[in-house]
Structures are given as C-alpha cells and as structure tokens.
Image: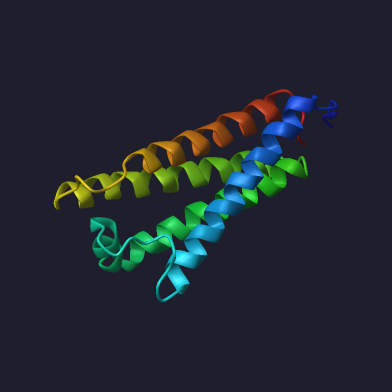
Length: 142
C-alpha cells in the first residue's frame, strides 16, 4: 500500500488552473459544435469554412481529447492516479488533432488561420501530462 503525502500549495494552484482551462475548452467545443452560429466564428475566416468541412472522425477525436483532458483535471483534483492515464490518452488524441489540423490547413490558404491556438493547446495538454505524472511520482495522488 502506498501512502499519499500532502501536496504543496502549488499542486492545488496548477490543478485548478488545469481544470479551469479544461472547462473553458469543453465549453468552447460544445458551443462550436452544437450552436448554429457560434460566437467564436468569424464569418470571413478560412477557419469557418474549414470547420464546416471537417470529417466526423476528427470531431470525435477532438471531443475525446477534450473530455479525457477534463476528466483528468477532475481526477487530479480528487487526487486519483487515473488522472495520469487520462492525461496520457488525452495527449495522444491532441497530437492526432494537431497533426490533422496542420495537414488540413496546409492544403488551403492558411494565412488567416491562428496557429498560436494550436500551440497553446499543446502547451496546456503537455503541462497536464507532465504534472499528473510528476504528481503520481511524488505520491501526491493515489
């Protein structure tokens, strides 16, 4: 049986920031997917046209990445080890998402696409991945 050690304050700060990011990401995904005219779309953007033509499997992988990332953040706050597994699965799905996005938008005029968003998503998901595994290694989660 492993014993949990009390996590430091930085654990709680990072955990709640990851949860806040995940919930915001989930909210944007739900609004963009299920609203007829989502507020995040710009009518003149190449992103709007490309989002209408995305394959269903891509939307499924994106939804899977977002849901597993959010679940990982929730389990991290609950201090459960499954957070590390979910973060790993989410990271693989995000890599698939980013790879397809890079490929799909390289085929069209991508000068209007905001690539910074992809790198921010990768940064947060990589942070979640490393932090959950670090927390598991330090026995902050069990």
